[in-house]
Amino acid sequence: MTWFMKRLRIALALMLPALTLPALSLHAQDTSNDPDRGTITKVGTTAAQFLKIGVGARPIALGGSFVAEASDLSAMYWNPAGLGVMQGAAVQFSHTQYLADIAYNYAAFGTNLGTLGTIGVSLIYLDSGTMEVRTVDEPEGTGERFDVQDLALQLSFGRALTDRFSIGGSMKYIREQIWHSSASSVAFDVGTLFTTPYERLRLGASMSNFGSKMQMSGRDIVNSIDPDPRQEGNVEIVNAEYQMDRHPLPLVFRVGLAWDAVLTENHRIVATTDTATPNDNSQYLNAGAEYSFRDLIALRVGYKNLFEEDGEQGLTFGGGLNLRIDRALRARFDYAYADFGRLEQTHWFTVDLSF
Image (cartoon, rainbow, N blue to C red; front, side, top):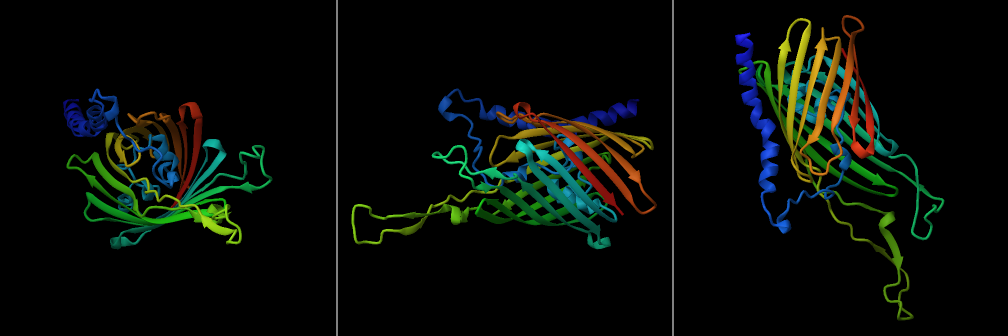
């Protein structure tokens, strides 16, 4: 018991900075009594918002605190360095019927190349479904229909440099399409994963969505106008294009810890926490915990976006079932529930096959 309490105090001391960083930052920002000097979060100033949703039922059930626990194919989203600890090959499929009946899907494949590292490819795809075109003059619909489709195609690589330290990176092509207009960009992710001298404690960090700005273009922003309706005899119809703004990608930096509070042959309890610093919102914290029995059944709980200003996200929970199909094939089924406050909730489903 004395040994356990000593290790517990060490772990809490190491985790304290990560837990308190968002609160200290927000307190420092809100110390001014001048209302004209309030915090500017830049909410709604970035493009490709679908990149902020997250992937995988297991990370979502842990409140999105996965940067130091990334160990499956969802690591390509949270921290590509997690690919460095992956063995063999695997495929993963994830689906959620997101808010407003938006279909949000993730598919990934990765394989270990031995001493070279692990390479993976993934696709995030969002589809709004068909909607009616409505205008001020025809609020009930013009008879036309449109949809919104977003995708991110990503190539990732991770490698364990030592038995304690891994690095990883990703390059991705991003595209947003609204009816006949679209925008695209190329972005990069980098990450590191470190097992501390206290072997049950892992430290992870990642930077996601570092890339060029996006600008919509297409025939929806082309309009025919008369450049000078007061004169006759000149060119009456000229095709003009609305000047669209260029918007940055939702860059985010994450740093987090994962601690195996209990690690025995039959039982494992891991606690995770992340702090995230986005370029379009206030700093926030994610936290979660997972209990697994014999690497067969897992129960998870978490809290997402703590300290985020005016945020709706909060409680998350879920579970998983890990089955061995034969000597070479394992299948894992995960589920997650995520509360969105006034926007109700989302349900996440993931299937992971490793071989």
